[in-house]
Length: 234
Image 1 (cartoon, rainbow, N blue to C red):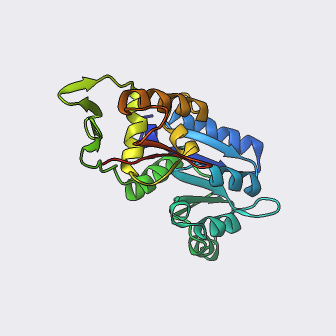
Image 2: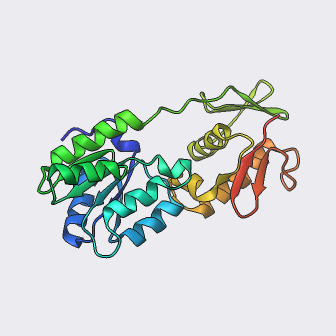
Image 3: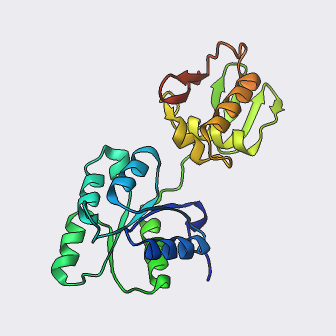
């Protein structure tokens, strides 16, 4: 099966209390090129959604305790960034009133069980095409004697290039897109191959040695206590 547009760069959350169905969905969507995290209940899903960024959530309706519709309403009621996460509802109920209820709760699409896995992938890809905006890189940023071009991924000191690893480029780009605003370490870790906050800290230390006049007292790549890091260009 061809990998759909956006698949290789999209992180999905699959919420279903049925272990067998959840594992099958994770396996199939993983083979389709998506990065997939599974949650066995709405409470587990909430914890994931409060700490990680997802490109789309696939949510089963009928679950013990809090059902998928309540979870979707909670998601839509979150602060703006979280409320924008697209939702595809999965359910065994397929009456018009059920579809209306699902869409009314804030779902972007509704797929009835049983369904063809291929249709699920195509519906997810269609939602991502509608909702995913390609990143718009800012203009080159002045960092004292250095200059970082997010579009090219280049760091220069005067006319001399400074070598950056791919992980350092990704980190600087994320910080540049949110210049003068703190970025959570967990969010930064998502873009790192090591997927750990410790790896982010190491990259920041190395970048400070390349950018800062005094790495021990950083002016441009600042630590925001309790949150993460912030890039403060000239």
